[in-house]
Length: 164
Image (tube, rainbow, N blue to C red; front, top):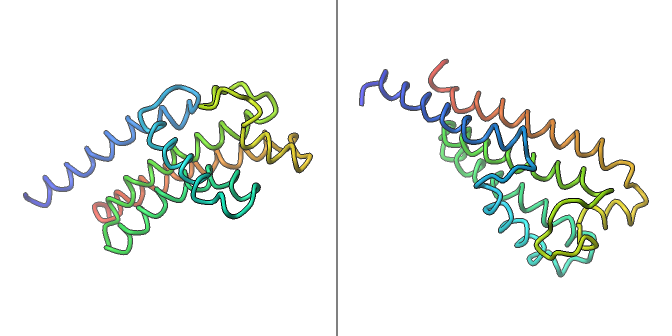
């Protein structure tokens, strides 16, 4: 493949990735194909950190939902593949957006949970236990900002080798 075709293919791949991811970032409460992938890692985080106590176990869901794509990004960066790291950073952005929506939902607990019981809402338990439910909206906004920043960083990372 010629360098020009390679560059065009990578840019087309990034555009396709953005078309796939950005709607899920901007509207995290709408169903997205990555939601099920993120759910698997979210629930695994609870199970894997169960031994560390209730607070860590509750945080573990959101933490693992973010750590798995972050670990993939790190693996690609260690291999020197900035393009792949950038594309996977888009997955991290969608995951940040989902965690943001979950945090913001804590006071009202309107999201449908897989348990069907609103009392099992991780962030409601965490923030409520800390008497900090009033922080759900600002904390959710910070995490949403990280989602938007991840889209920008991921795009820049994916394009880095082709525009420098």
